Length: 211
Image (cartoon, rainbow, N blue to C red; front, side):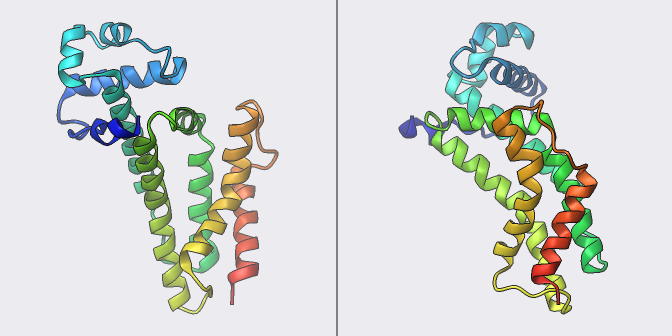
């Protein structure tokens, strides 16, 4: 599928065509509940209240539709992360605010469901998966790296490389709220609350990088 993957990413942005948006929304529901292989085009068209011919006019194949679904999910994630505003305060306050917002986001079962779908279909859609994960690193990591650099310029923390430090903070949050349920199932929940996870991560981070 590598030879086809580059050409299946969507060109239109969400909101430019309501009919298209409805098709993508219904397709996402089917792909997430049934997986790629078991999903058929006809039920998606019925759920979106369009003909099969109309659906194919927007998306020439199921591969194109899947690419649009994953791009749409990435757009949703980016919009959610835009709500994370890093305040201009002391290091502990700034980092705790980010860590808590990140814990709540990564702990969302819907977020895990999308990641499961992308990971399951990665061998078939390598370019789609690569773009999805690249966007995630950029959307999540960029604001934190900028904040870390500001805190370092103020002398509150020090590090060799901002991206490494950001990855360590995010990793401490991701492990209990995202990776554990991703592997063991959504019914397995972290014993600590998101607030406690964020606080513990920041304390460990500042013990390593604080001045």
